[in-house]
Length: 160
Length: 160
DNA sequence: CTTATATTCTTGAAAAAGTCAATGATTAAG
DNA sequence: CTTAATCATTGACTTTTTCAAGAATATAAG
Image 1 (cartoon, rainbow over the protein chains, first blue to last red):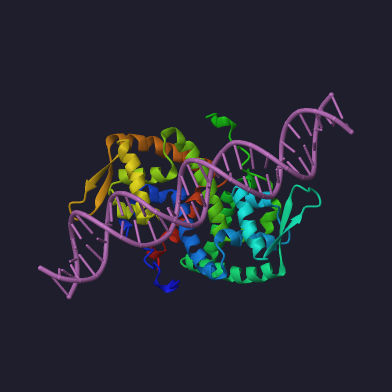
Image 2 (cartoon, rainbow over the protein chains, first blue to last red; image 1 turned 60 degrees about the horizontal axis):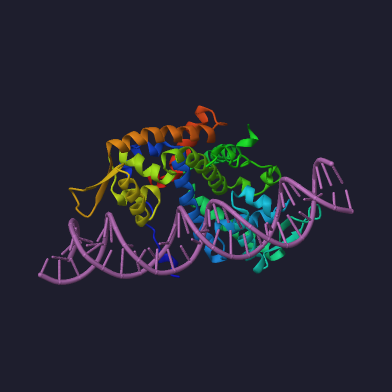
């Protein structure tokens, strides 16, 4: 409640520490970028009763090749048991369905419903607003380059 | 125990999902990169009884301008109470000291001991090995560019 | 077909991390 | 002096993460 009285003082004056070894490590910069990014994204997604995690599941469920729960776990770097909980919530809200995989009856394919697709459209707008806020200081070309580099690090097997 | 029998199958075949909307979102790519990166870093740091978090505190404590706990919290995007726990551990091991700030007796400056500096030197080698593994597919120029872009997103106030 | 092994989802418990409010000591402002 | 604000700390609480085990299904070998 009272969403406007929250902490807007996320940014502080730690310029002194910018000269540290740590500030030059990509691992650290990635963690900080992710922390800030998910803070902004969660803030925008809150009105839809979604978080970054549930949004990610819904997004993939809306795609052209809906994933199994096992695929969700691998793709999102989550434990299979966490996927169960996320899908439970979304299914309870009628946004996704567990469809038995005809090729392997152990697996369940997570597919979005019509309602799920509608919510996803709004959610994508929310995350785009958050992305705009998070990447405000980057030009379109820089964003493309960042996306390219992060894709290589996020899926290292793609390059070998 | 048995460190070599752990999961080497982190990378899976989810090429199908690479065509999804989500795979194009920087927020998601950042989260995945960070997840993989901290997995590798924690693995390398384990022999030193450190994790990425405690390593970050130790690193800043070794720097030329040791931070207060408040600064650590802001810089590492952590709650002040989490800093207390991290510093407690490091102080118990004799790696850092809580030095009262002469300019503000409420604050405590976290400074590394000689032992702390020695452990940090080893730890930095460990994280560099992990970074090498995580960024193996990027050229030196690409790593520099990634570092530059992530710095802008991690510290957006620096640009406005 | 039968047996053995592996995979997928699920459950439940435990550990770790994150959030939040309150407090004592100190500082800053009025 | 009084009041308000800040820093480190504690404790409670929620969320997330990690693990181990089990039921159902699939795969491979005999």
